[in-house]
Length: 361
Image: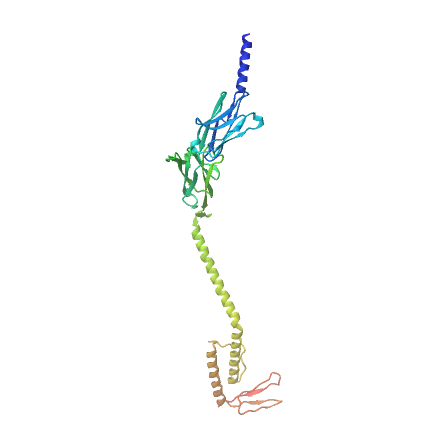
């Protein structure tokens, strides 16, 4: 009998609990400027008026018969809940401010009431600052992160190439301003091993994604390691390469210029030299009366002035020799030629053998 009475008591309690009104969520955190939404679901019992209170002050009244009544608060309204949730109403607080933070109550007049908590947070800014964007490999680089205008105190993290940096590798300091806003500063020292992205992340619980500031760090090799163990600075190698390239370019330019100049002047010079050679050989032949040595080549300056002077001198010598020279006596089986005024005898290789006598007085 006692067991049966206990069972009935538990059943009645469960029915009463299931029939009690609900207010959800029990706690809500939003960012300043966002909307706060709470749903109040009455029990099966009848109700006539639903009053919403914010920190004990009535801000909205709903009549079961007439719906939402006019309110003096423009940022407060209510919407009818879904059919599946029964006779429920959704309270909406738009453009939340820090002063709206507190306790929110759904009061069914003469029936029941439930209370939930509202928290309003503020999102500030975050910025990461580095010493330089270009560093040498192995160099130590100091980064700073500044997160300002947050409420409550934000959490701050460092990432290098999307990998979380251990908390022991950087320091954090914070301060609170007069408007109950927090500023957090942090420093991180990184040894440059390769080009990386350094990120500073700040966040509060209402943020779904942390606020991020990135810094691109480019790492260059300071030296090049050779096989024999010696090292050559990259700057020196680059400078030497540039000098050698410039020198090679100058040499090629000079050679091309000389080649073009020789190709342009060679026909004229060849003609002048050929004329000088023929003239010189003719003078020698006339002066000596002998054969011209075709292998002979006069050496000396080849400019036009010198050639003209040399030609004039040879003409004078020719005149002098012709005065002192006695005409040749030539005997031949086919023809004889005596010329008292000329000292030159032309011999043809096609004719018969000639006998030549020269007498000099």
